[in-house]
Image 1 (spheres, each protein chain N blue to C red):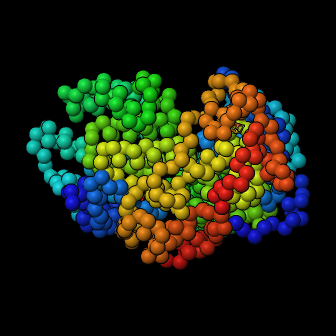
Image 2 (cartoon, rainbow over the protein chains, first blue to last red):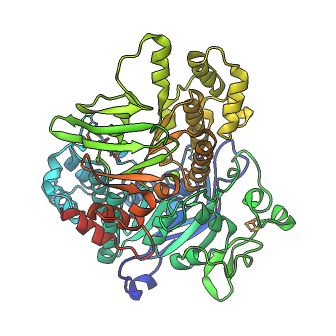
Image 3 (spheres, helix red, strand yellow):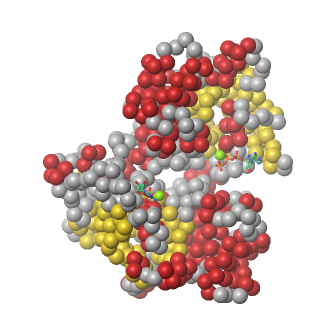
Length: 337
Length: 265
Ligand SMILES: Nc1ncnc2c1ncn2[C@@H]1O[C@H](COP(=O)(O)OP(=O)(O)OP(=O)(O)O)[C@@H](O)[C@H]1O
Ligand SMILES: Nc1ncnc2c1ncn2[C@@H]1O[C@H](COP(=O)(O)OP(=O)(O)O)[C@@H](O)[C@H]1O
Ligand code: SF4
Ligand SMILES: [Mg+2]
Ligand SMILES: [Mg+2]
């Protein structure tokens, strides 16, 4: 989408590295996240896509160790070198106040309506770093300008600004601690297309200016294709396909990815019925054997119901990983260039 | 030509100094599907609420099947008949369903009110089947259903009263792609089977392409462009329509150019 970040920046150690993340919730028959591997380098934008309930939000919340009560996590999550699952409460506060920041879908739910925007923006800085109020406010004003808002907004209340502006305030808040990693969970889903484009332009700017790594969670595949360097497709708590955005959309190898693309209403498609994916994702109360997508998959054979497919690189393309027993069947399909 | 399902003429509504709806005129043919698109705050929902009768207009009129909405109907039966003509499905079915009432009870109650003599068990089963909900979902409370299932319930309830016009305000916006595709196909099937008309409000232009015949583009309360959906989307005439189209993410799009274009009026 935007000017590529210099290769030197991308070569540095990843700002986010998730290895074999397995998350169990109380009263469930199988892990809700089941062996998630995911990497975001400095200045890189990675999109995490999938149906609702597939585990996208839990993955991004795990990065800040914001886990549901009773959840048990295994595996490793490191953020800018810090091992998130073993941090002390104090180190965890530092992580959340600075190194990594999160933007949510509904900005109004994440902000106290009775306090001014200025107080909201400076709170974390004043509490965690003992920055004097005047200095914190100056920085908040500068961050508002960085996201294209007038510093005068500091004295306004959340109810006095539109949803699109409030989402920018959220991004400004996330930037206050100069994060190396930004987690955006459906951050533009509630916005109209024009406001969405503005927020995406802003996020693209941040990565070129500050080298911020971005994990962008969305169920909008068109958006994922347009804004990310790499896309990870999640199904039933596993990453089933991951590839550079262009390759994934032009040549999807996993039947689920192909089905998602076919189900998306497109501007350049003929009018009429969509190729909906019949059925529902598996319930957490049932155990899984074999490929989790098998009951809904048109390409499924006996082996799919018996053995879980492992992630394999597409021949000749080490950056394109697919977990499918028949990942070569879609070879040559044109997908959606 | 059969009588249009809905004719809206010169509709206006202000809140203080905000002209939420400003001289809006359009026609929805019988059995047709008309989209209303526009950015947030352009007046789509206000227009819909006036059409449904949840909001009054400062000026203009709404005519359904040749009869003016708002004209006094004589008698309870006539009033109910008028109330049935236009039904609405909202973005979040959760908020429009009573949490204590099961799907089955909700449909039966709606039928009892409007069609006291109909065989309610048979019709309820028919409706559940029509929206692709098994009888298993019949006993469920709203919170036991997924978002897509709740939206099916909301559609079934609206269909129960056999309206001429169904107003859908961002009715698929909260659903993810696969469930959205199921609901959009369902809506297309229902229209083909029953000849119902849709007023379809959305800011997703891909959805508009998929489910509407005609479209109006609103900006700051006014219609800036209207016409056949394919024609408007393929050769937009108004700069604002072009801005909306350019805002749709696609590989190689340029969000910065859109951000700049928005600031230049
Ligand atoms: N009850 C109300 N009181 C005051 N202003 C209102 C009210 N309802 C709507 N407005 C204003 O009227 C304008 C149009 O609002 P409307 O809800 O119709 O927009 P919309 O096109 O549906 O937007 P969205 O895409 O965000 O749903 C906006 O400026 C809004 O703030
Ligand atoms: N706090 C929680 N307690 C119990 N179950 C949860 C909780 N959060 C999420 N889940 C369950 O975990 C699964 C994945 O959820 P989530 O990560 O929110 O999915 P996504 O963001 O992809 O829609 C879902 O089945 C959801 O119901
Ligand atoms: S492993 Fe089998 S069931 Fe699973 S996606 Fe591949 S073909 Fe379909
Ligand atoms: Mg989520
Ligand atoms: Mg609205």
